Image (cartoon, rainbow, N blue to C red):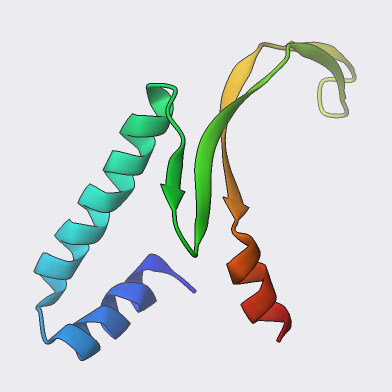
Amino acid sequence: MTKTRIISEICAVTKLNRKEVSGIIDIFLDKIKDSTNEGHTVKIKGFGSFYNVIKKARQVHSPIAGRVVDVPEKAVLVFKSSKETVKEKGA
């Protein structure tokens, strides 16, 4: 499912216009990014958690360059679904 489809479905249920719904979703996603970038975990009960994990620097073989390339350390946003979400999916 895409962001556009989510916006369309929310518009159909709430009768809000696309611009309003799109703005709300953008604010929601920005708050998640800002909080995780500050080192916080964002927990949404019944849905899951968003948090940053630091991936260590490493060396990888680049088939394009044909040599070993250094990849620097970086933060990666991770989502872990709640147990409730997993149960519903399997049911």
